Image 1: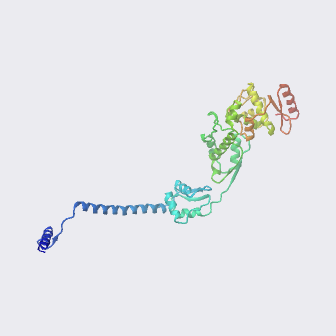
Image 2 (image 1 turned 30 degrees about the horizontal axis):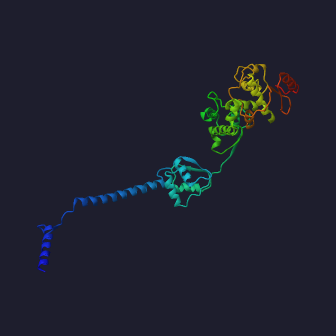
Image 3 (image 1 turned 45 degrees about the horizontal axis):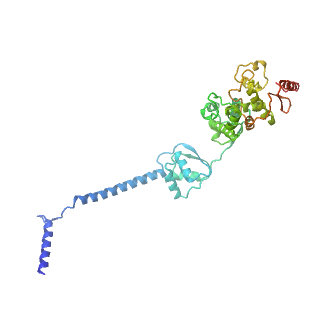
Length: 377
């Protein structure tokens, strides 16, 4: 017991020595270590930064949902058939209708989802999420359809006239600019072929309100259709088998289009053209001269003597470009000419059928029929 008591007294004295009793009676406790202060300060600083950061993030998210400032420019927004919500959100952000597509999808999942219908919607840049969704959940704008028909065998000038006559929103100077654009060049056309003759596929095209005022867009579509048809017909492989280029095929097809009056004659006329080329004979095709002098019919001796690379009565070989827009039937005929040794053809029937001749004597006899029936000229 005495031993334990002495120990307690000694501990009390040590503890008492560790406390600084000031003269005025106040007690000064020992200072905390500097390491402890740093830990406490660091934790407090991190907490403050976290609070500030979370506040900034929240503010940023709110600015995405409710963009500050006035609304932006009007935009025609189109939802394609079958588009997923993620695609729609990405398109909205790409056109600056909303800011962040991820935040939009998260917001949308908490606000009824996005069962949107395909169509065109009138929107604007910097839309509030709720406003944007309200528009997209409403009915799409009614679309007015326009239809334009370009028949086969037309020249560029005639196609231009058809487009301007049928599409009131088309503009002449803008159409000229579109025709000169390198974007409408045919993939098989040589660099010198800048007049775009014969490369726009003749067909009927349906347009909506947007495309009905897009000159370049329609020409690209018509050019693409030509390339599609030619590819389906294996123009490269079949042209090589004939010993000509794909561009030559288009030129021959345009001649067939302008010369043939009935379908059975197409492949035969193509054969006559190839036969004369192989024999190094002038083609002597009236349609090329009519193109050169910008006439539909009624050639004169003066016309037949015109200096032009399109005058096949004076110049050997094919014209430098097509002379009209060929149909699929004419392109196919140029790729698959009939078998025969004909070198001439003459219109001899009011139905439009031609007589095909292997000899000059047979040709002259057919020509007499043409003149007697008043089919020539």
